[in-house]
Image 1 (cartoon, rainbow, N blue to C red):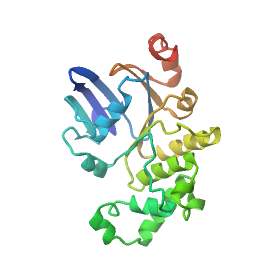
Image 2: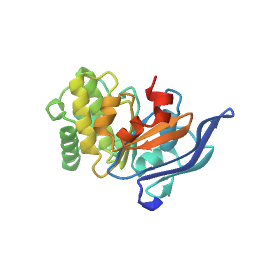
Image 3: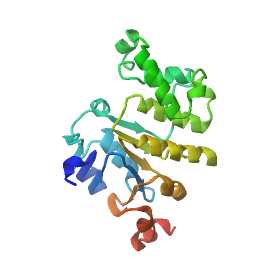
Image 4: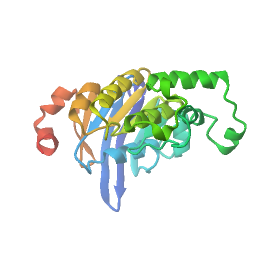
Amino acid sequence: MSNTDFALAVEDLTVSFDGFKAIDKLTLYVSRDEVRVIIGPNGAGKTTLLDLICGKTKASAGSIKFKNEELVGMDEHLRVRRGIGRKFQTPSIYENLSVFKNLEVSYPGGRSVFGALGFRCTDEVRARIQAVAEEIGLQQNLGMEAGLLSHGQKQWLEIGMLLMQEPELLMLDEPIAGMSARERELTADLLRRISKNRAVIVIEHDMDFVKQIAHKVTVMHQGKILAEGPMEAVQNDPKVIDVYLGH
């Protein structure tokens, strides 16, 4: 594959905070239709990497290309418009609005103050909300106040809010933290479904969950990539066992 065929091509990416290299000459390629899981000990630079991709943190050096367009130097909101969606660890949903409204305000054009004032919930928007609600398993809960959802359902709603924008790269930071076993299973199914036609990057600590969802696993350590490949190969890599899985 040439570098232009990847949804995301990160090359020689470096970010230093006061001389400390949190990410050190990191290179990573993620295909469309791929669920890539990033694992590694705390402080490995996993969340920082997502911050760099979405534009929350500025790179010191290197390149981040999304669909072959350079992101380094591009504002965060422009990256969202290009099709990059990011979910943080704590869900940021509108608790006092219905599930339907949460999805509606996430529709592109429904976001800005001026957009919201002139925004009409057209049939097209309704159809999109319906489709996303089905995808995240909340079609029965559209009229419900979002604050009343279970913890897992809130996480799915937030993923749904990102899906409303039809991102081509979706980044999720520990999406199953605090979920029940059943919710974890449903989340694995959800991630498998939504990785069709888009790249999904997940940071996760739960190895059983990683096994269920990952097409490929990237192990980070001290801002670098320690190992990469299918879960079986990574699990049996002596370096990985030494710095991460052995503890």
